[in-house]
Image (cartoon, one colour):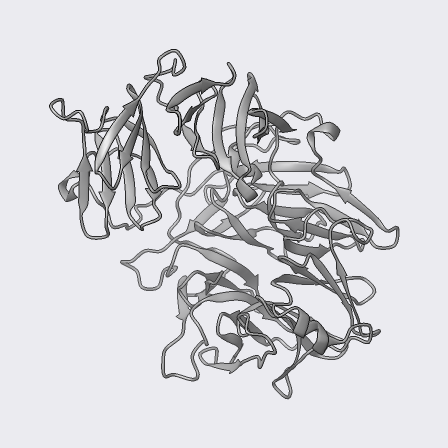
Length: 572
């Protein structure tokens, strides 16, 4: 984790946008095509055949365990060591050369050997130690040679899986085994060696399936047409009460509590992993911090600039400094602050249409503590607090200097990495979430961190038994004044300052039951429901504290009949 920060004006913005007009898609409610501001050229370091690439048409990339970058192209295989490219191509005089120059896919096995899938000649194994290729092809199994959408995956036993049709190559016996006449859209490995595939069940219908190693059969887990909320990263309520939901795969949707329906925008708005969302106070704009930069979306607008994407422009020092954004916040003056990866703190100046950058400068104690910014928070007095990998920062009133506060932790797990900030307006205390160090109370007047007092837990003994007491993702407050902390690893933590009690809610232990202990966020809506997302693809939950009930938006296949279509990464 770790990202820099930006400030942007909320009205009349121009930037370095990049986009496309989305194609139509199926959803609970159909969203009309969304205009996107015309694309502009973006600066990149560009490598071509003049630099040593086999072809300018690169199909896929692999970073191997040794740090080499492998590039599959239409005219051979490349290996890049950070300085130069090495070419691997077919040579009719050399039987140990690459069998076919059109390379579709690349994977690495547990021995460090490289496997390539070619268009016409099937599999090819590069034994790195011997620097030679061996070709494997069985046309009775590989019946779709020449088809450009061939893909492969590798399971925990180093078996190479093929998708057209579903089959695998046993690297120990060097035999091809056909499993089914079905085709697969993609493969992926989950936790503990689990292996998954997205199977084609029929026209427009797919399923997520998990490999049963005991019988070499894929068991269907999900049949679903949406897939937009299975890996939720953030949820924010707009002024109209609708809940905006952003996911790991970049899907954006809006849940309408009144009608209990979704408006699905798919990936057409952000086109990249969504980290945080922030609806403007007037409800006219939605801001998204994504792995692809900063996105401004004007829902319901059909103007040319209803979507604007902001990315770095190295010819303009006032543009967004880096392409990955972590957090976004609009302060009381209408300024937009954005956290980005490695670019420091930035502010967008409305009048000048420019980003103002704040970052860490070694030797300058008034600069930002670290260039990696995790979160931003404005307290009830209008003070802007910034959580970084190097501690808590308070922006000076001159908006150019920072005061840094560091946590003297009992633990050694990233004690200064601030990942969440919230305020108890009744006492004026800030609650700080640390990545690996749990929750601390912070007194802005004294600048001191303290461990929250809990009469039901011996905190010193707790820290001795649990040296890394929680990777906090974010905070939310319940209607009755309890602080909820979404934790990655320790599920949900509930602290009641008035009672000085701390509770841990872990899956399948205390009702209402949670689906996962790897939480990504918690959010309390206007009705007092607590919404929870996780990073395991187990869906979105709402918890009703009064009734002691948990409700899931996403359900497994046995409880859900909606067909599914999407890519494999939507569900892991």
